Length: 399
Ligand SMILES: Nc1ncnc2c1ncn2[C@@H]1O[C@H](COP(=O)(O)OP(=O)(O)OP(=O)(O)O)[C@@H](O)[C@H]1O
Ligand SMILES: O=C(O)[C@H](O)COP(=O)(O)O
Image (tube, rainbow, N blue to C red; front, top):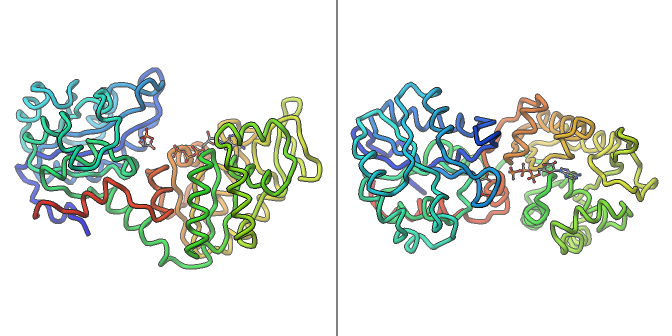
């Protein structure tokens, strides 16, 4: 197991709290604050208990268009939290340590984007991560480390795995709740239906193989680009445009999907119709009416109805990845109706940053658990260990 906030004597202690507030931006400013809001429970609890909180987080990837400072994240936290929240444009320098040292009980400072520092975007084992400048220079200013960043827990990067080597490590409330839900799926009510969609074909194929081999999945229903890969594997002539969208992401996806169909075909269900653009409109085509010059952008009504029956009857529905290009209203139907049906199952779980954003945009509510993680949630669903969790479990320092 690992230590949680219940094991932490917070009053008067200086804590490094790693969160995942990696968010969509518009003109460098926060465009969606759902991940910031997800961490309010942990941050409020620690500040109310009199801790001095230094927030660590990343935003975007070096060179990416969402690579930015955390100034707007700090401003939003200051609006949302009762406690005073400051921003420091350094992460581990003397200036950062002085700012952390100056915290009073119940105060918070958001340190600068950890990925402004090159070693943070590399992967290390925890002991090596503990010797990076970021961890070596900042850890002396901390009494303990709290990791609440479930959505980044699959990254073995210094700010996620290095600190528990040097100071006591604890799981935050988001981390604790995500691990509790996603770590116990094998004990949920059957039949279990996994709805895998979106664009992360390789991750989704990994999840599909894992849950089918382990007998966790009674049914796997596929949509999105993932569904198109399976249709191609099943010999459906989608057309060159759809095939390009699949193959540009993974040139082995169709082969791997075909292997899964050979081994587990009775439990894998494929779209029966797709939606394409024709003269600017949404047009639904049965598989027999394919190939189409335009790419398949959504699942069609027949597929939605068939999948809806699986989901209505499901004891547990686990969903990741939109069913179509939900950003375009013409192709949002599959995601809206499929995920609406998933909420009618006995217990519904959804993972994925884009998926969660899709549900908010489409007004789909009612999921029992909305994970903050995309890749991390998928990794959990494959039963793979998460580096940032394993280092907490190692529990190198007593409570
Ligand atoms: N048929 C399709 N053709 C092209 N793109 C599609 C199709 N279906 C879904 N998508 C795209 O998939 C993207 C989301 O897929 P992804 O797998 O990244 O979701 P996610 O796991 O929720 O995201 P995150 O990585 O933020 O966790 C959306 O941008 C959507 O437009
Ligand atoms: O948004 C996410 O999936 C997490 O913040 C991890 O981000 P990364 O894929 O850039 O490491």
